[in-house]
Image (cartoon, rainbow, N blue to C red; front, top):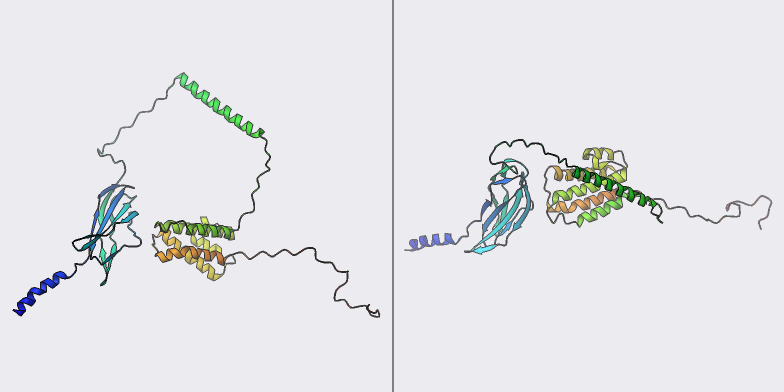
Length: 327
């Protein structure tokens, strides 16, 4: 009897163990047009005390993530359900695939990683002709030859020309009390760079997830600074060309290496679809500001004070002539 009771209790204890987390993925359509939007829904079922760890950034090339919304966790039958809806778009044609990505579920027992299934999407051109028939060539448009229409067009041209001549003549005869506008001296390149970096840091691009645009802006600011500071046409050069030109300046070798690491990091984000961590993104503007600090121009010498007191024509250290008593 004891063995039978123990055997009956074992399945009951096994039923009390929490079920492992699971994941489902669905799309609202499997056919879209170039630039059209589709929605990818990711649903994670997990224990009530667990939390879902969504990726900080997603690279779903050839699809671009336009937005992501995470719905509040819902509870039902002792299980929790967390859902995220991703808005995607692509600008390529053909049979494409949404790649898989990993979602983590953290609980007291550790983190469980769940991988989504890839989805095939057919992308067609906008305005596809369903009939697949070649349309006939349209005939030439006829130009109306009514003398009244031609006369009205000529009158409009004459009035427009006369109005322009009158405005130009009035502008030449208008008196003005203001002298010629003269532009002041150009601002120092480091002052402009500091202001632009401060604007970028408070622009909110990082908070909106626009990491690529953020790195493009900070790279352009440093390139414009190098153009103003060292007369290097950095905005029009590749990073390698910029670094070669920096060798001809008074930039120290360690600062040159810091410029090389900075430009390489920005190029990886701009051209290689590199997704840096949030910490690295937050440090890119302080790194740029430190490069400007390290290459500030030397301070200008202060002008000498005029109006120094003149002496009586004799040197202070001149000794009295021999044989003449000092007064």
